Amino acid sequence: MTPAAALGALLLALSGSAVARAAFGSFRERRIGSGLWRALGSLAAFALVALLVYLARLSETAVPTAPLGRGELILRALAIVLFLLHTLAATTSAIPLLFAAAERAGFVSLVAVRHVRSPRTGFLRVISFLAMAGIGVATAALATVISVMGGFSADLRTKIIGSNPHVLIDRPTQEPFELPASLLAELRADPNVVGATATLRFEAMASSPSNLNGVVLHGVDPREVTQVLDVPKLVEAGDFAYLETPEKLLDLPADAIIGVGPAGEAIVKGPGLDAVEGLDPLVRDVLRAPADRRPGLVVGRELARTLHVMVGDELAIVAPMGDLSPVGVMPRTRKFRIAAIFYSGMYEYDATHVYARIADVAEPFEAVGKIGGIEVRLRDPDASEAFVAAWLPRVRELDLDARDWRMLNKNLFTALRLERGATFVVLSLAVVVASFCILCTLLLLVSEKTGEIAVLKAIGATDTDIVRIFLGEGLVLGGVGVVLGSAASLAICLGLRWFGLRLDPEVYYLDKLPVTVNPLDFLAVVAAALLICAAATYWPARAASRLRPVEGLRYE
Image 1 (cartoon, rainbow, N blue to C red):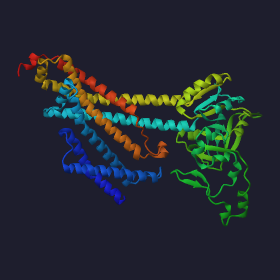
Image 2: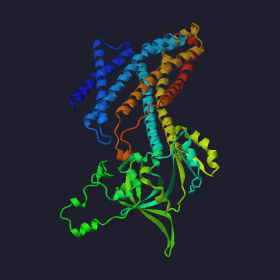
Image 3: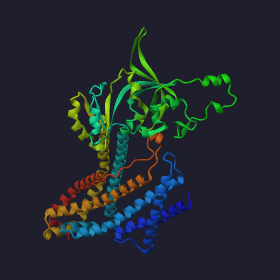
Image 4: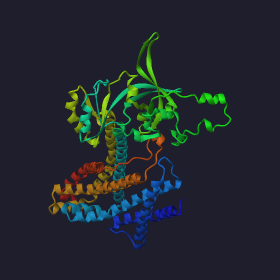
């Protein structure tokens, strides 16, 4: 750990207590604290800013897949904690101002806020604090989990959009067809289209000398596919351009990257036979025998590991259809040479999808002169539904169908929405449990404030006013917890988003925990929490409104 980082950690340790003290002091006494605490709070803010700058520069120079040291992990954790404390302190300091504004809003809000701030018995004070703390913790947990799930959904959406066409035009039966003369030109002329290309797509079996695996074989035009898919940009070994010049795979340079190791390290080809001394001449001649020229094939990282192949190795693609022979139907087989290995970040995609030239795919699958579909990339992926609706009449004239990326991955996105909704409902139960503390607090408060309620009714307060007062008091207790919980969740999410929680890419296919801060998600959490608090408050409020002034003042 550098001296600057050690100083930052020391300032964090000294200022954490200052921030916490300022937060509790401002809430209870409506002041930030003494001069010493204010100085330490300012020091904490300075330490936070300095540490943020230090970690930002550290993140820019760090290798994404490299593990973090213990010191850096401690610094990142302390930065998130300090940012959380600062956020809570600022939020708590603003609560008295909100209380003062509510007191000036009217009679009902004045009485409700005064009830919240009035002195109470020891047990009632404790249960009131537990009510606010429970609502805050439940709200923070709900908002944080929803943000993390939103981050996973956004990351998956980005990968799907990059690795798949935004719109696919093909036959409903998925059979190859002859390319309409003008359709491709019409699509490219659309101002919303970035690129369009004809492709072939078949399911096949990939076989290497050591293993075999089912694959989805894509026949593409190497020059046009870059306008539609991001796969050429995701290559980590070899070169996508080798699909057009596969003869270069027979004589790769010594420093060419031909694979990726288990820890993400690059594997280079190394020197040729000329650098090996003492090799038997007969063995050298055998190894120097010219290899056959094979068409190029681009595979994913996981498939390359499964089949134990690297760039330059041969791979056989077995088509499901075959030729009749005396021993039965023999599957058609064509050998390819690995031209490149890509990494998209989606396991299923990296383990099954392979790419080759459309001309090299058409022959073994009896699709010469035909295509399997037209893949289109749009300027705005979110406008894919409107694009499909506009082009659907035209493509149906040709007995074709059009589907956007949402329809192509409908089951996946439906499952994500269902999982997110179920998580929201389950975690909302924590807010429901915490709201029982508010219910108990108000029931005890009604029994403690019987005389005050009777006086209010005696001077003219209606039953509706009493209900509104106690509803307001319950919402104030719940609202304080909701505001603090939302602020804490926002601080945690922003901290995770800025500094990141490192994950093992080999396991999670992510180098850090994705977090998406969506204001609509936070508003939904706040609305749900306040609604639950209002529901828990209604019964004590109704009990207070039914109190008769005579009964309340009988023993006063």
